[in-house]
Length: 453
Ligand code: AMP
Image 1 (cartoon, protein in one colour):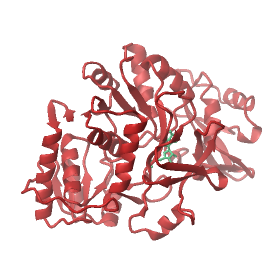
Image 2 (spheres, protein in one colour):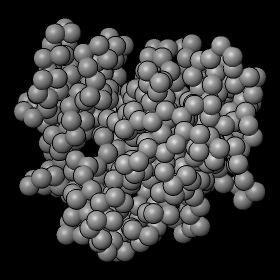
Image 3 (cartoon, rainbow, N blue to C red):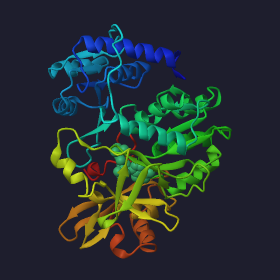
Image 4 (tube, rainbow, N blue to C red):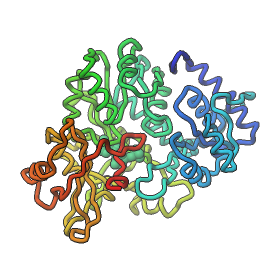
């Protein structure tokens, strides 16, 4: 296994011995199993070494989005109470100002490798904070058993082997980049090339760099397609493209099929359980459906069609938050995802949206995704997000936020009429707002709470 980035390379043995030395430093600093060590830095090989050092010391790694500003970082640090924070650049200053000890990720001190910690599948491995689109982020505590099940599942469903080279352009602090990208590479013995996302770099690594797999979120595939339209490249040798973290619009699925030589395998996941559902590697890959459960994962629908999960991949609770933990599970132990699903005759799952994003207009329930799927078909619509905007008359008004596809903005009346031809009246937007781009978080998810503000 090799981890490559920029001009540097680390073999599996080097990663392992560097991690052991970092663990030596952490142990000398008084870090013991169960203690938290946070990582607040951009993706880099040093990030990986730091993370593996934390795990090798038997400690619990607290993942921090490097884009967090001071107030967001403060919430996480006060909540997780890490003994140390591995941070880069200006982030070290933020950490120190908040009264926590920061050590530089680029120059992590080393020490004498300590004995292997006595860990079990129940030992805490990491705290990953939820994106907090509704309220403050909660720390999902994942244990070693969860991570192992998630990684093994990924190897099996996508036929990942030691011959594979993953082009890794996802944030490492998020389960998609960590639990799939990094852990899958380490477990399967393959290689990974860590790059910042740009379409040129991805294509270069998939061609000259020998990449065989790429994992992305829909907004990355969108940019990749735009680039490939201008710079057609034969990518038919790539073994698999995987897409998830947000819905893959059917039109983008078709565009990818044409430009990449195959449609991406769409999968569905959540911080609290890892990637839990995927379309089958051998197909058929159906647009608009996220597929079938990972090995060992059980999926069913609960009240209001909520997707419920059980299995070794699924976390046991939120860090120091028994109320949120209790709310997150049914009395018989199913994790409530907050997503509304539909299970088809073939047993495959489709995601209709999040329960909390449900729009209640004039007493009727509208799922934004259903309306978006229709509006995405309008030729003048490049991208669209639908949300409820408070209204005296309707309670909430279905509102479409549209990024036009051409320079000439589409006509609001025409878009509303287009919806009326295809949807029941109460589901149709009452208003259309034009935007230059949609507000998205680091994983390309639309931040609906910011729409209309
Ligand atoms: P996170 O915990 O940040 O990974 O966000 C998980 C949420 O992302 C899920 O609860 C879904 O709402 C959404 N999500 C992930 N994958 C998909 C997908 N393929 N289609 C639709 N929504 C998705």
